[in-house]
Image 1: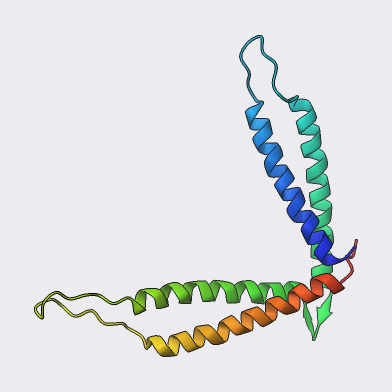
Image 2: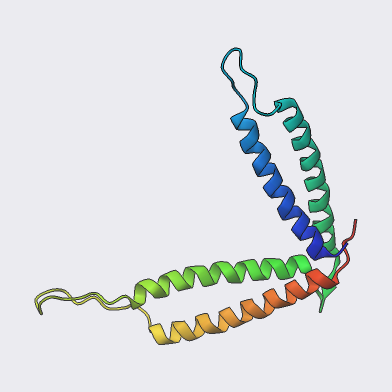
Length: 151
């Protein structure tokens, strides 16, 4: 199995577990004399099986990510770098959005509000970081489809 297939399986298991949670909650109580739409014991057994499978796939993904190296960096390191870049981009985009908003003055008596940064320069930095993020993400996506899962 390729790493990408394992990642898809993990996402599917997470969706199934979320669905089972909702179904369990809906069938947790019934009025006296009624029966639940689904047997909670069956749902709980299915939940247990899915959680065991999820735990095993997560272990295999983590083992693969930490054991597979590309240019002296593990996939896990590349993921951490991508996530950190994504966080920085998110903060900078919010900051730039606020800094670039114009504040309308209705008369010369009102206080003028100015940006604390050079918006054009900060946008260039964001563009550079965005390109770095895209390239790193593309590298990771390619690795996902070419790396065999270590089980």
